[in-house]
Amino acid sequence: MIIDDQHYDVIIVGTGAGGGTLTRKLASTGKKILVLERGEYLEKESSELVDAEVFKKENFSAPEQWYESGKEPFYPQTSYSVGGNTKIHSGVMLRMREQDFEEVKHQHGISTEWGLKYQDFEPYYTEAEKLYRAHGKAGDDPTDPPRSKDFPFPALVDCEPQVKDICDRLSGQGLHPAYLPIGLGNEGRTDSEDTGVTPAIKANNNVTLKTSAKVVRLHTNPSGKEVRAVETEIGDRSYLFMGDIIVLACGAVNSATLLLYSANEKHPKGLANSSDLVGRNLMKQLMTVLVQLTPTPNCGLFQRSHYINDFYWGDEDFPYPMGHIQNSGGILQDVIFSESPPILSVAAKLMPEFGLKQLAKRSIGWWLQTEDLADPNNRVTIEGSKVHLDYTPNNTEAHDRLVHRWIDVLKSVNQTKQSIYPRSEAPIQVAAHQCGTCRFGEDSKTSVLNLNCRTHDIDNLYVVDSSFFPSISATSPGLTVIANALRVGEHLINRLN
Ligand SMILES: Cc1cc2nc3c(=O)[nH]c(=O)nc-3n(C[C@H](O)[C@H](O)[C@H](O)COP(=O)(O)OP(=O)(O)OC[C@H]3O[C@@H](n4cnc5c(N)ncnc54)[C@H](O)[C@@H]3O)c2cc1C
Image 1 (cartoon, rainbow, N blue to C red):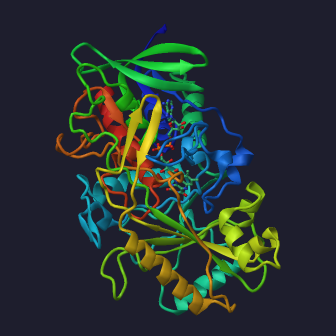
Image 2 (image 1 turned 90 degrees about the vertical axis):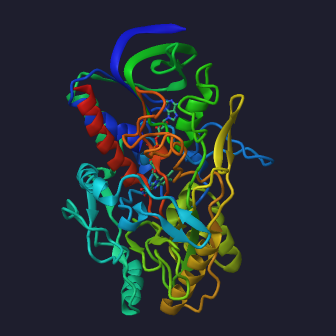
């Protein structure tokens, strides 16, 4: 084991939405910061092409398998690279709704109340939208939360005409399609490499990034009250890095497993796990992609542009939250990426006269997501060196209702005689929206982190990624992870000073 001779003020593990953003926020303090990232740089061209409406993209899956009790191991769809999952994300930058921070009654249970409210996050959402160059338009969606500032850039109104046409028809029916806020820079979607890590390194000589550096264990001092060293594999060598403050930002599954792997005499169930909640309450939302066939071809390659939240809080005959709908990007890119994308394969059987590419150009994809509820039995565990996921979907009727309701709506605005809408539900390997495995809160018995995302048990250990969510909402989580990193960054700046 090589003991690094440097001492850092802060060590950040992971460069995704949480870690990359925090690196940028802390860089200007001049403090000595080490960033450890298990992945390498991902080529821009390949990341830009990705859209997430198809649930099978081995190209962008992690190079390791995770395990599910009694089932085949799988390659999770999660990116180990500088920028983490923001390198392959769809760029959608949505705020959680105001009510999402409260206790909400769902058909099959209660969505956990947050210890902080929307108003606490609002300034950081504003900062996050500015940093990640969100293009949007407020006010079209009745569930929009209040905002102190307008979007920093106007919405991308120049969208695929077929989508625009459908949205006009939806408006004609009294629904409220709204422009999706998208983070867009000069070279495409913004991500936490270009927005977070790279500017932090360029502008300051106090930030050191080590790539292909996989953190495998945290070591505490003898009392167990402080993390002393971060054990890291780089190539075939092991290093120990020392720092005053340690921040995990490995994503909800990997931050939890790292804490579990770091169990020691003082922390027999895993670091910071006196509550026995590390790894529990894994949430990932219920997701379905639906294909709508169109009478005439479209260009096949286009950006996501609209969302519909009319059923977010329920429907006339269903007084419980159902979820969020957005159009996926053009489906042709999935044909480029995968010879036989599963959802189109289903459609191809229904329309055997079409080739996959033709079919892709005759389709609009819709992406539906519903909140799943925190359940302590849905959890990440470790067995030797294996990562296990136990996950049983809940709140499924609300999601089914959303899917069927949306099919009815599409039928009513459709110009074809289409009666079958091929759909594909997200399997376990779609861990894209993983959240909740180290929830934050005031009470150390019912949460792993305090409201500053510091572990209740260890004074110099923080977790600043999607792990902290007590409930997930039906909104894509990326912007909330970024806003939270900015919020915790402010706390850390005060602490460091
Ligand atoms: C295909 C796809 C599309 C998505 N689209 C959207 C979208 O449009 N809008 C949205 O809001 N959200 C979207 N998401 C979700 C969003 O990307 C995530 O919520 C967000 O990136 C989570 O941030 P994070 O910091 O928790 O983790 P990540 O961004 O996953 O970053 C974790 C980082 O930690 C590194 N790491 C892990 N373990 C270790 C270790 N042991 N040592 C060192 N480094 C480690 C990883 O390599 C990675 O870089 C999408 C996700 C995917 C996969």
